Image 1 (cartoon, rainbow, N blue to C red):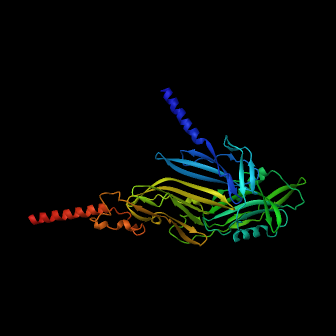
Image 2 (tube, helix red, strand yellow):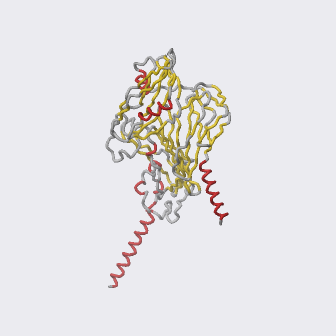
Image 3 (cartoon, one colour):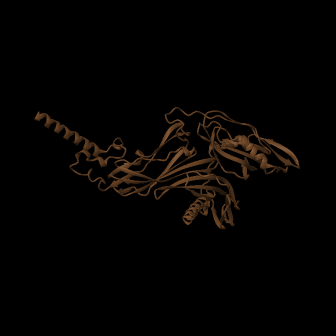
Length: 457
């Protein structure tokens, strides 16, 4: 018994150890200047949630750190869900060329994941990315009236809808032509205390994961600045209450003397959403749908894999998994899902991906928009909107239900049913026609029996 107990204990600890271990991933080693390179680690667990680990990603020469994204994926293996949690550090190249990245390491809790040295090819983009008017307005507001060193707390939105994301950044800007030398002092105490004053209440937070000061170059009206970014997060207001963020003060050392710089206070005024039955129950933002199927043409009984990804700047955790029920025409089997958040410029984008196996039971043409749609509040149009699937499956072959052959000449009740699109048969999707036929037949028999009994009397 002791041996058996020790065996099971060892097996349990081994399984736990496997789940607790992190594995390393990296993206392609060839990118453009507008694309990001990413280092990631993945933790697998039997639980639906895990505590955020302590981690540190390395500095890489020729690359500057962006934000850290988090993703959760669910896969079905042997009928059981397996959960994967991915943390990714994004890097952006400064100049095109070949970057020789030396051996480095990613530290996750007490585990060290070795990154072997490699060459990263960075190419110039064919087209320059245009600066949208919204970003121009934000930059103008940020630098208005500033000529020397200044501390700034900025927001991408000042009147977001309730549930719409707005990003807060806290940075120090020093002109490159500044002749005075400054140095930081006790930032390990100053910055955490200031960040606590920034974080608004009644908001969902998606952090960019800045664990150290992010240094970058900024050019405004031909004047160069060095930006020291201390904090950046995206928030989603949970109600329409105004958000007040006080002026923040940071002191630097100038020839051993303290010099204080202060930011302007901010007021964020969330707007109520228009009345709607789904108000507060659907994401708020600007989304688009990316989808694919392994094939569009198949035979009854065969299977096809449907992938859908809803991507946008709204809070993607509100997207519900598409637990579509099977009906008379199509059978659905969920294979897995993944939700992730990742930085894109000054925004934190969300991605909700579903993987579903579809097995048709009847021949015909079926528009998947009758089965898959995503409702959200579109901040670009200020209206409730719906994303619909644009895929149509063409199914041939015999019906899988041999007792109900929709192609048989004798089954006049169902003739032509398989030729209808899924849009036209949506009213029949939840009806079992064989059951209805049997009920009608049973009622007919009971009526005949009743007439026979009545005739005998």
